[in-house]
Image (cartoon, rainbow, N blue to C red; front, side, top):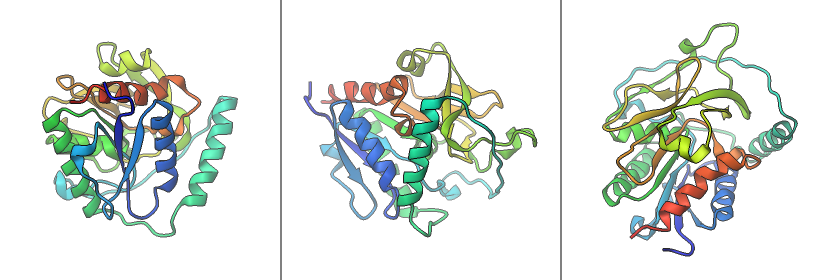
Length: 255
């Protein structure tokens, strides 16, 4: 068993600082050592015990041969603590956001694809967050919906908020259920894309009411879970932090 598993956390070259801080905090809280990985600062994959593929820009459709699209909308929240944490996070994200952002990041796509393939080959635990979950599915031969607006009624639209305002249903026989300990929960939502066709041996472990896939996993592996939401932005939720704790528990057993 490793005392302090080394967890690689991927992100973009431009921006992503606040997401890195929050994800690194979750890893440290769980007893791990976070390592920031970017296209301009790759790392030796053999030094990692586990991997978190972070959120960010859309995965280039070149990798799954889909066509472009665009659109979205909004909606209202509930819980006092969630409000406080959400407002603080939203303000911090704006503070650390960079002025311009690319639609696609080919160098990052290539880096993360290599890391996911390395993790698959060596059976390292992997947690994908938002874009990360989507790329995990694509690496295994799946595809994405480039815009999920068509899933929603015009009156409601796709909720996009750092607050946990989206309800999801979790499959009782999934690994995710064992980690979160519930079949229903509220999560945040910052995405406009989602998993479409499943990759090789990938199963759906959670959906929202509109039908959008919210989590995937590959049961044959020790830990290969992708979630559409951002658990790093829910430090107030013990259940969501369990995703990082379980990743670290599996990483501590890494050969």
